[in-house]
Amino acid sequence: MRLQHALLVAAAGLLAATCAVAPKPPPSLRPGAPLRPLSELMTIADAGARGLALFAEVGRVLKHPRCVNCHPATDRPLQGAGEPHQPLAVRGVDGHGVAGQGCSTCHGAANYEHVPGHPHWRLAPAEMAWEGKALGEICAQLKDPHRNGGRSLDALVHHMAEDSLIAYGWNPPAHLEPAPSDQATVAALLKAWVDAGAPCPTP
Image 1: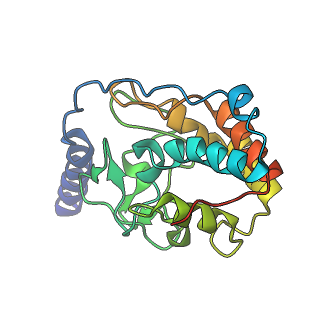
Image 2: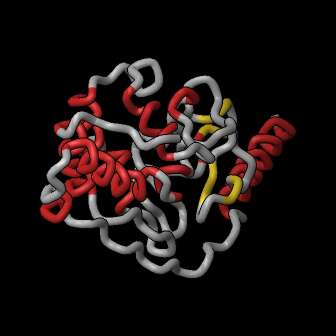
């Protein structure tokens, strides 16, 4: 029993150390520039050109580290400005990590000091990965129900507007740069893109 107790204590200590010795946060990053206003983009007369301009602004958010880090090309998440996650973490079967080292081991229900948090912290499904892809490729992926969670374009807009895990992108720990603009503005840009025919830039 004493040996078992000692092993449990040692395991708990190792687990705590794994979280505690995470790398120190990098210096504060410069805030991202605001996106072009929707009112300005809506003055573009041609619907196709307007749609491409709208998606270019949405793309600045999609390709920002706050989004890309959870949509990595591999099963290993990214952190900070796009560095591999430390300590080593992997996707697991459902995006929540693996037994003994799930995302919730270190990521709580809310941000804590330099550790991001959310009640459902997880990686996006592998089919939704877009790290390293051109904006046109990401656009085609977002429109494909087989790679966007089975969503219609209207459902995609609702997802962008209402999902609280997406909202984390604008509310990271203080040392991390938030995604450009804000959730409501980006959802409005995405809605206007859908209304313009949802054109995709050439990959």
